[in-house]
Length: 346
Ligand code: CP3
Image (cartoon, rainbow, N blue to C red):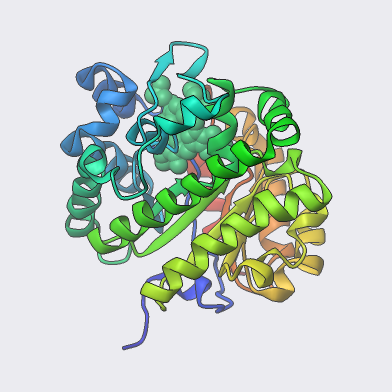
C-alpha cells in the first residue's frame, strides 16, 4: 500500500513539495486549553498518568492547527520514576529527583522489565491516541536518551552544565556505565511497549548531548542511541526512528548512518544551509526554527521560516522548531508559521 501520511513519507526519504509540520512541546502551557486541562488534572505528573486527560492534551494542538504528527504527552523523567527514583516538579523551577551517586543508590534501581506496571497509563494513552487521531496524523512515541536522563538522575535536577553527571563519569566510570546501561535497557523495553500500543514513529531526545565531546560523545550519546535503535529495529524492522542529539554541532554529521536513525532532529545553533550540506545528504532531517520566533512573530518569523523551508527543499525534511515551544509563545504565531510553510510551495 502506498503510504499517505506525510510524516512517514518524509521519514522514508521522500522529498515533498511542502514539508510535514509538528512542534516539540506542541501540547503545552502556551495553549489556554492545555492550561485548563492541566488545572483539571491538578499537576503535571497527574496529567501524564491520567490517560484520558493526557490523550486530550495530545489532541488539542492537532485540533487547533492540524499538525502532521501528534507526540504522546508524557515526560522523559517518567522512566527514572518507574525505575524507582522519587520525582516531583517544583513550580517555576522544574524537576527534582532522588539522586544516584553511590553503588548503594544504584542497587535500589529496578530492572528494565520491572517498569511496565508503573508506565501502564502511558501505554493506555498511546492506545487511546492510536484510535482517536485523524487518518493523516502520525503518532510519535518518545523517550529520553540515556545520557540526558542520567544527567537528571545523578544531579537530582536540571543543571546548566551537567556537572554532577560529568563528575561521576570521570570519577566512578563503573557506576556511571551501570546507570547508562540500565537506562539503555529500560528505554528499549519502554519504546517497544509504545510501539506495540500503536506508536508509529519513536523519537529519542538527547537534550544534553552537546555537553559531551570527542570520545565521550561517541561512548555516551552515539553508542546508547545506536543500541536502542538496533534493538528496536530487530523487533520492528519498519519502525522509523528520529534521533535528537541536541547541540551536537559537528557530531550531527554522520549521526544517522552511525546509529541507524532514519532522521536527525537539529537544534537552531546551526544554519539550515549547513544542515542541507552536511546532514541532509544522508537522509531526512527535522528542524530547526528558533523557538523565540513563536514569541516575537512578525516578518522575522515569516522570513526565517521561508529560509529554512527553501534551504532544506532539496531533500526529505520535517519542519519543527530547534527546541520546545515556550510558555510565553503566542498561539497566533504558530498559525503564522504553519501558513507560511504551507503557502511556500510556489
Ligand atoms: O513535546 C511534547 O509536547 C510531548 C511531551 C513532552 C514533555 N516533555 C512535556 C512537558 C516531551 C517530549 C518532553 C521531553 C522532555 N522532558 C525533555 C527533552 C526535550 C527537551 O525539552 O529538551 C526534557 C529535558 C524533559 C524534562 C522536563 N520536563 C523539564 C526540564 C521540565 C521543566 C521545564 C518546563 O518546561 O517547565 C519538564 C516539564 C514538562 N514536560 C512540561 C511539559 C508540557 C511543562 C509542565 C507543565 O505543564 O508545567
